[in-house]
Length: 318
Image (cartoon, rainbow, N blue to C red; front, side):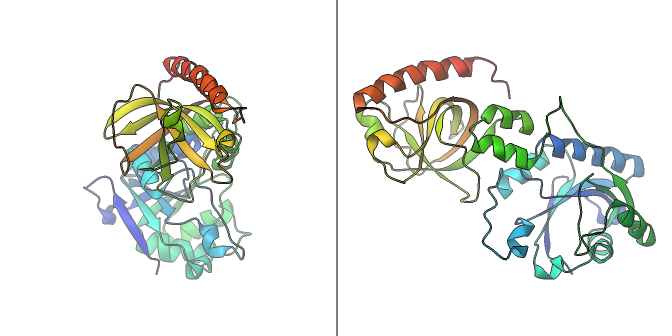
């Protein structure tokens, strides 16, 4: 039997009524995922079922990989659940994937986990999605297996937008390259990091640009590529424009200690250490550079501030 946690977004959940579901890791809850979830909701309504998604506490590859695997997540589990809640589905099952579950064939998984444990009566299968230890099985097999136990299997309609191939992998590639605007196009919202403000070296304060240094909540979440970005930050419910640097601060000889530093514009707050900060990435300003002196860096940061203010005043609807 599978171990799982059921996160109910609708408090009138009735398992005996049955569920229409889709399975996936849903990392990022990008536009493709949102399109699939809308299909789940429509098919559930037609059949008098309740729409849910089935995901995983940890990436399945962590349980299966024979070598160390670093997933580079687009969302933490907390962020993922909140984004899924916002789609107005009734709930999310988070499976605790382990070696035992990985050994189940697709037929066993459908019968034991989906039908008996989770009360799934309609399953929307992704156009390129496979599950079960029998990796050669596919959509036609799932349809046949479903008919035998009482699960209707429907193929997802493929999502495309203006020839942009949207996927979690594509979004990661954009972020690694610093292209936060294309990542935003995939996600349907700005990419977000959350964490705690920690003490830094106070070098920014010495040149008139104090920074809030972020320690991300999740070590496995992907950090965009090195450079300077136009961002918005939220602290204690207050929103600020910010210019953020990801990198090694070469002008300050920071070595290999990568930092995520945000200079908050028009922020009079003091003693931010220990506070929670949410960062949303809007535009990339420039690469990280080594300057000849702290004074040269200060001149560039003054230019960056003007650039960021202009960027964030243009087309920043979420």
